[in-house]
Image (cartoon, rainbow, N blue to C red; front, side, top):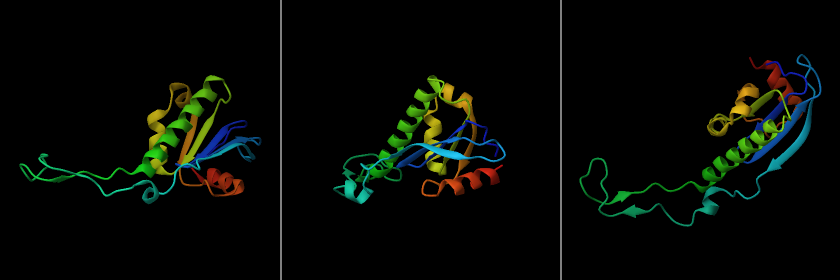
Length: 152
């Protein structure tokens, strides 16, 4: 994948976000860290959930006319990761509206990438040069550069 000079590359998952800027050129990217954000307020689901999934009496469920239906347990960890992705998209919108970048590449795991897409503002979408569905948040910058060069 070509990474234009001065492009912003965002590497994110549901808990970490890394803003990089290409100081190199499209053939030889030289990504420099601009900003790093880590959500330290999202413990594992089992540390957030305090009880088992609820049940409801007299609720219509598939396969039973009336009976005790189980309610799915809320995944608080996933909700927080989705919120973090929405916050990342809001930050991208803010920077795009300030004309902070002309070209943007997003690298994120598929689930996070899907959540980000739900929240892209038109100004962000217009600047989007590429997406890479990979989890590279814990990789060194040199490996991120190589992953971009190998991507189509």
